[in-house]
Length: 240
Image 1 (cartoon, helix red, strand yellow):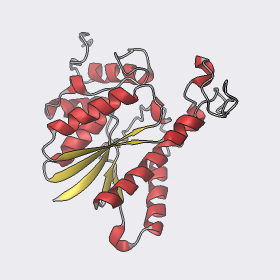
Image 2: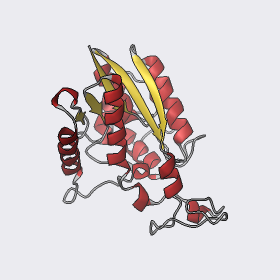
Image 3: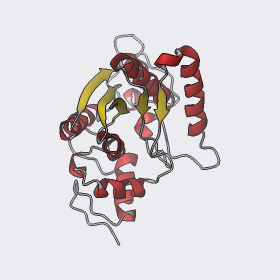
């Protein structure tokens, strides 16, 4: 029995990844908080997922430097806040918003942390829920144009870097079991696995109630519609 590290944001994709590996493995679910508005809800959802799995542990980690650096405008330049310090909140929502430019590198950083966790717990596998369409605005991963989607190149490059840095006995591989699947297909898998989808958190703008307006909420709604399923987290019946 292996220990598999799952990077989890508390959503449907990471839940499907976890259940895929849960039958024959121990799991370490890693949630990373970097100042995203939905951090608390994501962590709670990941914790609930860990409770429902037969052999799973939760490791919550914080990336405080990202929280400090991401205080910037749309151009990605960090602002000087009221205290005169880069990264200090300015009490201006437009200035303090998460910068897409700053977050563009969050995925490689998360994978790097995942590898570090794997080394700590004696795992040789890190799993991430990257999908065919990378609906992940809060991770700096907008839905790519198929002509310019270079996530596989990113993963290949990171794998080469990790292999070069680690010894043969400590090497960690990155697995992306959902990368060839669309969101609707993943919803269908979640329904087949009988996952508690109402406990999977998707919204990237709130930690209380889903806003229904952010890119993540809209992508989830569209996925359930395409999968011809009803989202148990809402009272909206999808159009058939």
